[in-house]
Length: 344
Image (tube, rainbow, N blue to C red; front, side, top):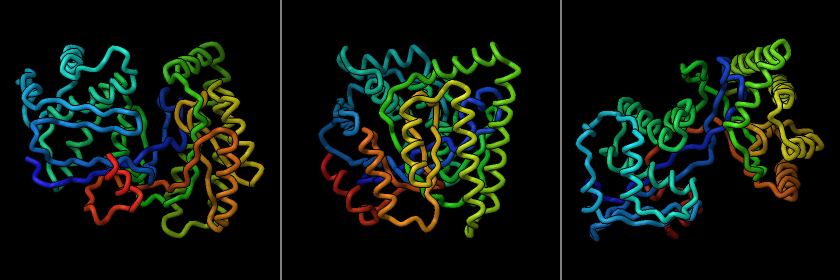
């Protein structure tokens, strides 16, 4: 039973290299971002569970007694159970969401209810606890995505940088804390459609597309090697290699048909300032990352962010290799984070 306020955070994540090629058995590198999602758990005596997700406009409450009416006999403490379609339908009944609720908001609420009803929370996390968190987070991903790779939940749980290939996930040792810009073009895209497009192109032009995928795999492996050598004292020439890999990967992804005019614009804006960018994730819009070299003056960073914002994009300066899921004391939080939580 929670007796005091508990503050928890988890990092965001981007794919550094290996988008789409990973679907065809190649290596992908994923990194945790120092852009974090914060969760505040606070006890109440009103017999209700309140959920507030301000970024997507969700504010909902349920009676604890009503939640307990759910048949949860199949949930054994500590067990990881896959959310079945029947369970998701039960959750929809209990959630009581309006018919016009957007899919994103609906899935977020269902994932919360599923995990709330299933997990016994602990305030001190051992390695075994983190493994359990990762497994439950994967099940939450299944509620939302159906058949996720497991990369997102693993990066958010363990942090740092991960190597993913054919279902096998391993951590990169001591990845450097590279500074990047994360830019959201705000162009919506359908991951399933983009993945299918690459597959169709591979079937249509196997002798052209297969070498592209092999080359992207080689880019991921070379990046992994360079990151491993950089450690805590990266050399300027290593950043030059990373920039070349970013440029090559972006051209390869365009050749696979997953680029977009907005991403080309992002690359052009940053290239004009001597910076190197690529899409991250599915492509077709969405987000891109820009590597910031050491010694880059802050006014130049701000000017680049302003130029990207002027294109209608959202832009954040952050670093990769962030810690995984973490517990915080209220006094340790950044004042802006504390202010945001106090406003819920």
